[in-house]
Image (cartoon, rainbow over all chains, first blue to last red; front, side, top):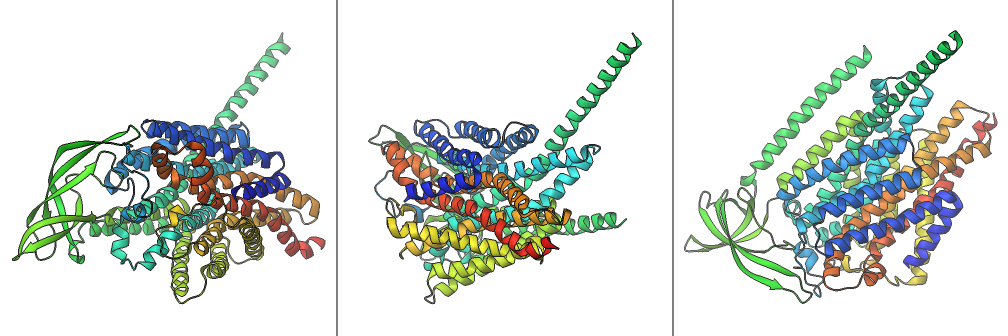
Length: 268
Length: 369
């Protein structure tokens, strides 16, 4: 079934996206491969955090530079994604240490009895990494949307300074925010529906739901990735407006130097 | 002047919001008396090594016994100190180590009104959930201001509608049908709240619904011919009812957000182009529509991919450690999540031409003038 769906997707992507569609299709499978590298490395006994961080950087390099080309927009997105990744690694470590969502809830473990769960893996670190991997996609998405829109603005209005560019970045961000929230909300609703129906079927009370591990696991993931994709808006706005104005100064400097050289030449 | 006024108003509203949030968090830190269950706060812990568990595949885990002293915070036994034993594995796959200051639910075993022994029932997570909700709201309103506030309202409305749908489902109407009706209602609410009531929103709503229907049709045809061949429903096994229907509903709702996002982006940017130049040709419009679509498509597909795929990583690592081969993991154990991601991706790609043609159809009359 997955094969058939993959083929349908490939045909559609080729028809609509052409070369870019093919790249997108390849990226899905490259990313899948990278996630398997994380799994194998963790399986071999590495601490999950370091491979996750490196693989997340590789993923963002692939999505940004392979799919969207190397330019000022993608560079500023890459910088902001890296900043955000570091911030969220710290947040998840602090938060994960307190909310205890590592490993499995009792409800999850009942169904699958043929595997041994005590395998020496540090589940706390792993659950933190899952939060990070879950949010990498949407921070890249929001970040590239903002940096490319800001880039267009700065090309069309070269006289804008950092502050004005930042402001327009934020107003672009406001427009994206609503649709991003919707995308995330429904994606997570799709993946949590089993859980919600489970609560309904077994008549969990509201306090039981809120305090249960199985709910907290999903909820932390949803909320943190939402927060990440909102925080990426100001961060990308700052980085992109900084990069856009810096090069302009260089260019004006170059122009000035050229003018001086010309003047010298003519004077000679 | 107007801007300054607005800015001031926002600052005042935001300060009120911050104060409300902080008081809500403080409340959840002290809400013990509202719980019927007994809650205890850990005052001291002591760990003791018991043994090392060696698993057939050569991995080992240390097992510890934790002696916890805790003080009861609510109920008739308030103020009493209890001692609880907690056994945990070093990896904490399903048990855990507690720290001093943690609040836990306990069940007490009484004899003659004296506590004989106590047992840990669960961990009190409500304060962290509230912190998450509060910081989510604060960040979204700070970044998006009024639009952020509207997004919160649309999320709340959606949650209410979704609960109604699940409730109606218990009355015997099939879940996939309900989800589809729900999807239409969701689209109406979300898109009007995001971009107001106008022509581009209408175009986006129609194209989302058409896009969703076509995607569902394709998925249903594939399901019909492959009969869930190669899909493992392991993660849905916690349910006691048949999960095929739930799976289809999950697919319907999971891709909906992305489909809406694509439709509104395309219809609003085409609207912009038409407004700038009334004499722009249909061909040029559809070409720039495709270009816009291409730009959003690839990152959007990745959003769905990572959102879904990250949930199975712990399972896969455990399976890997249990000696299941990687080739098996790839071919079998990721099937459920991959199906979701792939149908979502198909939905995203299909919606691009659909959104372009519907927007152009709606604007056709205006173009000719």
